[in-house]
Amino acid sequence: MAELGWLLVPVSGGVFLALLLVPLGFQVIARGAVFADLAIAQWAALGALVGHYLPVAGALAGISPFSLLAGLASAWLVHRVVRQPRRMRQALIGILYVAGANLAILVVSSDPHGAQALHRAASGDLLWAGHGPVLAVAVLALLVWALMRWQPGWLAGNWFMPVFAVAVTWSVALAGIYVVFALLIITPLLQGELDGRGYLPALVCAVSGVLSGIALSVLVDLPVGPAIVLMVLLISLLAGAEKRVKNFTRRRLRLH
Image: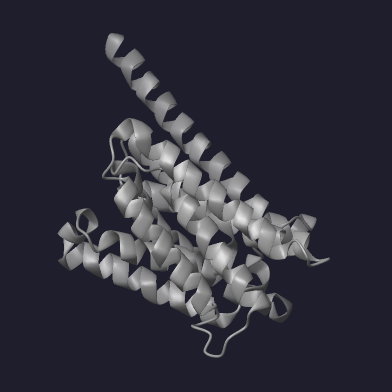
């Protein structure tokens, strides 16, 4: 058992990540800005890359100040975008994402290891997560659930986007852009929006996907980010199929 002790940090980080992102994902979908998280995550990753090449003193719980500033700036832009007509929102958010992605390519273009830096930003490496981002994500998860418990109206208010940007920034530092998108969108969409379920079933699917993805990565030596994304998707789809089978069986029994 002792040789598996190193997994405590990534496992706890993954669980806290699910606790933080799943409830925020429900609100992102409700606001009709599904790709907002992807744009903010991309700009947070861009800020992290800038911070890597222009290091400054005073890292904030494992992240560069540039990453936090870029995340907050992109959140402000997204906040302005979601006020636009619905038919324009996704296009404008897509422009924001593409701009951030191409700026990131330019930042690393002169670095022989730039492709690796971009890969880390996209796929992350939760298995080797530092204590700082894990602790920050844990604190943010507790804050989000406390606000939902005692100030439920904040989700629809103006404070949502800044909190969301901070959450996404530390989440990207912990697990990468793709894992953040998966936990924010896949389980809230498949379990909540399509199957009419609440936070708890979506959270169970997210945590199960994270844990099984980590296990798959360790056992088969796969990249942990893609493993988590695909396991979250698979478990969410299976859970949705299981509910549909149960509903179909109930209808058949009523007919008989």
